[in-house]
Structure formats: C-alpha cells, structure tokens
Length: 556
Image (tube, rainbow, N blue to C red; front, side, top):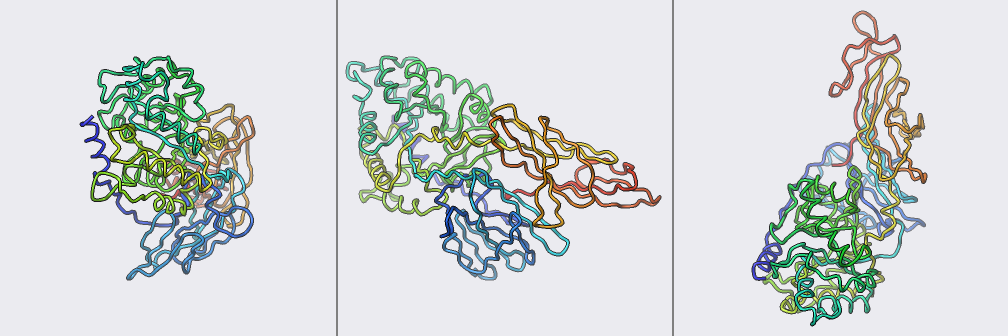
C-alpha cells in the first residue's frame, strides 16, 4: 500500500506537461472545434432555438462566408460568445472558450458567426474570398439536444475491495457491508449518484489476489444494483503505470478480456460498463481499435496536463475542454474528465485536501463553461475511499460534489446509456481522385460503418459563387464514383446513409479545378498539380486542360 500511495502521490503532484503553443495560419475555425458534440448550454443567442457562436481567423482583407452566409468581422468583445479582442503590445490577443492566441492584425482578421443547431449533424463550410482567390476550410460539429445536465462517478484502480470480499467472506455477507460500496449506495440513495469501478485484474495491497478468485456469491446483488453500480476495465495491474502506450492488439485484448470475462462470470452482463478509462489514460491506436472492436464505445479522457491514448496534443486539448469529442475516423467517443477529486480539491502547499471546501468554487467555475458543463464526470481512486485515507477527505468532497450537482439540476446517468452516441454514423474518409480519362474523373473513398449496408451519396459544388448549393450527382452502394469533367473549380463530398436512413456528416471535401491549357502543339493536355495524383502530359481531347486536386483544409 505504501508503494501504491507513493505512485499515486507522484501522479498528483508531478508537474503536468504543457503543450507548445501553435501558430495560427491561413483560414481556420478556432471555436468550436471539428468533432465536438455541442449541447444546449452552448447557445449564444437570445433568439429562439440554439445557436452556437463560431469564431475563426481569416487572412486580412478576405471576406468570409459560412454555409453560404456572410460572417461578421470581430471588432471588440462579445461576452455572449465568451470572446474578447484586446490589444497586446504590437499584436492583439483573441480569447475564446477553447483558448487564446496572439494575432497580427496586419495579417489576420478574426470573424464570428451564429450557427443554428437544428439536427444531430452541423456541417461548417468556410470560404474566404479576395478577388479571384478562394480559400476553403471545414469542420463537422454535432448537436445533442438533451437539455438535462448529467453526471457520473468513476473509481479507478479498484482491486482491494474485491480482495477483501473474498478474504473475509464472513465479515461481508452482503456487498454493501464493505465500507466503500456502502458509501456509494448511500450517495445513490440520497443524490441518485451512479458509480463505475474500473478494475485491475491483479490485486494491489493483496498482491496474490486476482479476479479469477472473486466469488460469484454476490452475483444476484450485482445484478439487482446494475442500474447504478457497474464494473469496467482499467488494466491488468498497478505496474507499469502506463501499460498501453505502445500496446499491441494482442496485449490490449488479452488484458481486457481477462477483466471482462471475470466480471461477466461473477457479476453478470448487466454490471459491465462498455466505457473505460485505461490506467493513466494509456492506449496506442492499436489498443483503442482492439477495445473498440471488442465492444467499447468510448473512453474517459485524460485530465488536463496529461496525454491521453493515441491523441495528438491538439486533440487531447479538445477532450480537456469539451464534454464530448468524437474521433470520426476511428468512430470512438472521448468524454471529458471534469473533476479529479483528490487533485482538484488539494491544498497546493500539501498533499491533503483543504479544510475549507473548494467544491462550490470549482463547480461554479465549471458550470459557466458552455462546452464543458452539460456532462460532469467525477473520478477518484479506490485507495482514497478506504478508511485509512480519511485525512484526504475524498469521501467528504465526493458527497459535497454530489449534493451540489443535485441542487443545480444535474441527474446522474451512465454515459454509456446516452442514446445520442448511437444515432451518429461515421462519415466516409480519405476521399481522393483515383483516376482520370479523356472526359471523366473517378473518385474513391474509405468507410468503416458500424452498421451495414450503407449507400453513398456524392455531391459537388461550384466554387464560383459562395452561395452556390451542393448538388447531388450520384448515389450507389460502392466506394467509387465516376463523374464527367466540368470546366471550373468544384468541391466534391461524399455522405453515407445506413439502412435506417441516417445520414453521416460528409467526408472532408476534395477541391478539383479544371482549366483548358494548350501545349506547344496546340493540343490540350492534363497535368497533376498535387502529389502525382494524375499523370503529367496525358493527352486529352480539345475540351480538356489542367486538373488541380486539393483536399479541403481542416482546422488543426
């Protein structure tokens, strides 16, 4: 136990890694970010309906349109959007709900736009124009209209309480004779709190214990309380501290199955939570894919200052700052970890929590964040709920947190029960130009839908006019489409539609330009402009010309 507490203390007090600042270039949507799932709390307008405030940067002198409507130039503070625009020496400082940056006004101009949220998918298409120059960018946002705020409690590093149930069966004739589970049941009865305990396969204090020794004598009690008490996967053991950073598929699945299979045996399928938080938020892309294929729908993200899973620093930051973020390419959801009890309510000068409660201060601040206050995820560790850890006051802080949330209208639900996650179909990916002929082009894409069969709808848009509509040019079951050449500059985008007529967001659009260019013989030829996608010098009939292919830019 001493070693365990030492490792935990190191994790709490070690200085977190600070990601390096990023430079903003070109056309970019800053807030909200691609893949974020928005809620009614982000409403930035007093008008009926929910409207999200979009904030971005464009090159100075460019006019900006969003979804065919003109955006507005930011000239001062916008409190309703959580935005300020202040001089900072020779630059200006732009502050928005997801961060802040210095802007050179000679090079860039901030813009904003109120985007109506009327359905589960809210595509954002940005065009910046100056004369004949056109820049494009895009983002996919999602909208969960559920107005009731929710919270849940998770407990990591769980092993000791199960070992004690096995080692002293006469002392614990019921699950709820154990002090930790008795405390959890008391919070459930008083405030409706729901709990997931994330398990180690092997014991911590009781090093000889593993889950195969757990008795099934409590199986009926687990099943009777599965509406508020669940078990999930954390890791095989306490050490190493980040076991899945470089995990292979085989290692990730082996450890996962070891825990899951034992939980199904001694507690039943209703007690299994299909979300997880791995030990120290570790998980290679291969590990996350393996867990996802084994039935895990989403992951609790890392606390601020800590890396999480396979995510980049920018993606990890999004998980820190919003209730939910969807990695559309992998089709997995990440849920923000809002409150780490023993860290967020700790005394900066010592290891233990403060005597004066910090709960209302911390939660009041969280409550005011438009992207991070619909879902509150509270977590702690098993060892700090045991009787010997009373000095940390974690039980007291957890009870105060549950009471505050209940008093402010929050209901407690398992995140895995959120139906919205199951309404979203991942979009097609990697839309690209596969081949060309004298009078046509062939596009292809990838897609890994959860449900099949899917059909695909192909649209294009003429970039000559910012208000030009998207026009449907084809539909079919395959992941390839052939279209006739058209003079001009066009965007292509592909949508997936499943058997229940749910439509995904579109793929990242592809920009294709076609202009006649005579060669020295007076013939028309086509030349690839990007990455050798087309064969230079290929002869065309007289109507042909130069093809340019460019992917739509996504915010970085």
